[in-house]
Image (cartoon, rainbow, N blue to C red; front, side, top):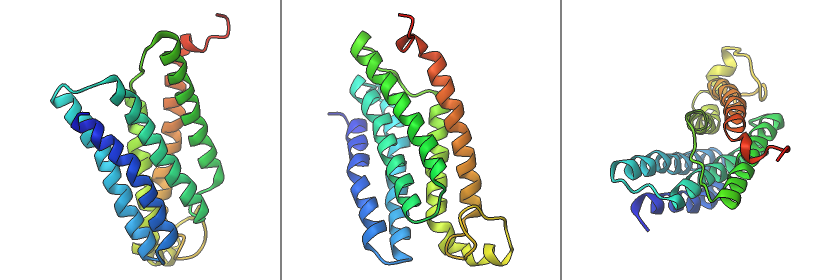
Length: 198
């Protein structure tokens, strides 16, 4: 197994560590450590793709595992953030629904034609935005929450210093918008795999 694929596997293995940090460590250590683990896992996402392209090590296994690892990481983060009361459930529903649709199309393409569909530009932009938003939602209440509360910044997720994450919330709105755009783009480009008329 080449290095890019090893980094992708490492990202999957870091997901339980991220969840454990948020659940087991006391506040504010839990969100800070969880955000650090999540950020490190997110860095492997950019690094494995860069190394695969640079060293000509792009494989079908990598094309399959890399977006799957991204989805596992992002969905785990969304569930944990909702558990912590930092995001609205509708955001989680929209993002997970998009990921399930994309994964289903990938499975159909792989089983019917043996084709592995790589992630597109919109999907990559969505993933990066989601990852940054997630990190901000975890650490912003600790670093800026009290100040933002005093500034009376409009809130989505609560009216206390512990739940204020204005910048993370704005990025989450952007991530949801990119989620919808990338989902529609993916469906249109790969409609042939799900065309009911066939």
